[in-house]
Structure formats: structure tokens, C-alpha cells
Length: 505
Image 1 (spheres, rainbow, N blue to C red):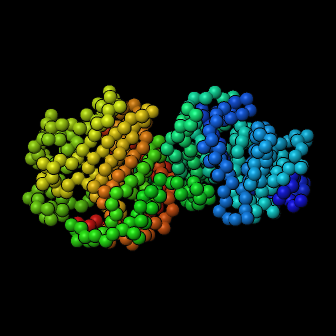
Image 2 (cartoon, rainbow, N blue to C red):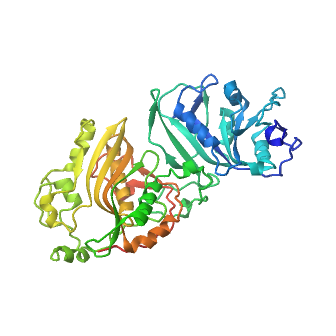
């Protein structure tokens, strides 16, 4: 029987049957299911039955990117013994059992090795033959092993099935250190056997908590602090099935589709576009904030003057900076007569935003929680008719979701800010209504790439995503009109460099 198919006991002093390379440890990833208070077991068993979670566990711990290789699963003796005999050892994986018990004997089992400590297991898996035959290492339990490994420097990712339903447990794991781990991906919640849960992956972005990610920026887009930079810049160590679930890939894949398959069309600016019709992106706001990372988005592009836009649509007499009755006016004064940007419109028209908030608070099941910027009677007075024109809000399970329809979407310049702005609006309204953010669904009619943006966007497509930041809102603010810029903090935003694109006008 070859070494790869035999049971081996490795001593921490290196006197086992395989001699590991000195001081050479491999990185690993943790796979675990836990309740909100980090409960992971009851009476030596999983206190829930979630077939989809078991399927996910098998897929992530079994799948490799290279044929001929396999992954290793590392577990304590109690976890090993909790696996039903008919499934032991876990097939298609090298099973590494940690135990100090001299009476533990599994010498006859294939694909099983026995180590006396986590340190000796990592040394073993770094040595021949495992150093080349084992692709990834997954630590799968139990409580004592997680206490040692979860936030240790060798842990590069944590794949956690987050159980949202209250379930009694007697075995627990430590909390995830969010000063060094950031959310990479979080699934939309699922319900199975009356248990609500979701899959979330956290990735290590720095080596230790000695220099935590800054939480003291002065405003939402103040990101100049060196302390915010990630020490880890490439996250391709993740399993492919997890890496490609990053929310930014919805945007990147749509851009790629438009560039290579879009229809060539003219436009009002004369620049020319590649376009497709009828698209949707869905962003999860529960764990992170969808501010794109494949290019820097620290500053908006509001520097284009109204005077530059007016001549082409017949409003050259409009004062510089006066866009007419556009988004904000329609949201707060729909139906009022617009004169100029200096007049006071208090009490005029319909305040749609306050109506939305009132319905969310007092009639959350209402199917008419609508915010519209499209007012046909005022279109001729606007610098540009609204692109993001209609939003509907939805409340369920204590969460607020928003679906926005955009008639025309500039994928290079506009859409990254459209995603962020409506995600921010959803978070603000959820905050003042005592809810948590849920989903932001972005529906697009004409999604286009300007011909002048093709090359910059192709450059952007070569950049790999990084973890989205998280958004913190001042808990003292409960009035939609009371917010100021310093009430918002972006935590952990470390994008790629800014990519220049010229606005088509």
C-alpha cells in the first residue's frame, strides 16, 4: 500500500514514518456551519438537517482544479467519530484525524492519516508525497480544532454556513476576526426544513490584527489611509466555485458580454455604442456594500458642467448648475411646478420619499412602495431625462430590498455609481426604518458600452476583484433628512487603480 493510501502517525518532533520539511506549513481553509452565536453542535451531532449544506460541503472539499490531485480534510477525533460508519472515511479526500490518543487505531483505513497536532498535520501535508498530490486543505471541526485554527495565520479563508434560525447548541467556535477577514461572497438566504441559512466566505486580507482595518475615516469616500490597504492582494487561492461567486462578476460578465456580443448602435452623442437589451444584476447587501473594486471609485464624476450638456437639448439659457426638475425634485416634489434651482418648494407636490418610508414603517406588505423619477410632463424641462427612473421596495424577514429599473445604462462610467447609489439609498432607508438591508436588484433596459470605453473596460476586465467594503451608518440618525457625509463609513475598501474614461456628451 502506498503512503498516500496508508494510515500514518506523525509526531511533532518529526520522528513519524514520513519526515516533513522543517518549519514548512501549508495554508488551509475552514469549512463550518454555525448559528449566530457560533454554535456548531449538540450532543456530538449537527443539530440541523440541511441537505443543500451537505451537498455544498461535499462539493467544496472534493472539487479540485487539477485532475489527479485531491484535497485533504482535517478533523479532530470526535468529528471523525461523528461521521456515520458508512461514510467514513469521507470519499475522494485525504482524511487527516488529529488525536493524541495512543489507542486510536485506524491503520486499516485507506485515505486516512493520523497526526498528533495541527502543526504536525500541516508539516505532513507540506512534505512528499502530499505536498504535490494534495491541492487544498480544509479544516472541518470540531470545536477544539476551530479554537486553534479559525483565526490562526495559516487560515486563508473561512467558508461558513450561517444558520439564522435559533437552534440550541452545546459546542461552540470562536467568532471570526473581522479585523483580518473580510466577506468575499454571501449567498442569498435559503430555507430548508424550516431553517433559514446562507453561505458566506470570508478571506484573510492581512496577516494579523496588529494593524486593523481603519474604521475612522472622515467620510464615505475618504480612503487615503495606508492602514486600509490589504496585505493580501490576490484571492485566487479560493476554490474556483467560490472565487467566481463574487458579486462584482455580475457586472464584469455583463460588460464582457456587451463588448463581444453587443449590437453596434448610434446614440445622441455621436460616439457610438455596443449595446444589449434587458439585463439584471442582483447584489446582496447583508454582509458588504457593492462598490466595485476592479477600478477605483473614490470620487464621483460630477465635474461635468450643466453648460456643457444644455446646448444639445435646448436649455442653454439655464443657469450653470441648474439641471431642472430631475431626480431629487421628482422624489420630493412630484407634480409641483418647477421654476429654478433657487426657489423654495417646501410643501409643494408629492414627497414620494417620505411616502415610501411611511409605507415601509406602517404597511410593509404594501405592493405599491414606489419611487419614480419619470414625470412625462417635466421631461422637456430636464437637462437629461432620468436614466434610473423607477424603484420599488420590498420588506420581508426584517429586511429591506430594492429593485430599480434603468432605461439607459452607461456600463463604463455610470453603472458603477448607479449600483452604489441605490445600494446606499436602500441601506439608509432600512436604517431609519429599523430593518437590515437585503437585496438590490438592478434591471437595465439599454445596457451599453461607448466605443471610446472599450479599451479601458478591457483593461478593467483583467483586474481580479477584491472583497467589497462594508458600510457603517451613524446609529444615532433616524431621520432621512438629517444625514451628513460623516454619518457614513466605508470599512475595508482597497480597489485597483482608477481607470480613466471620458464621458460622452
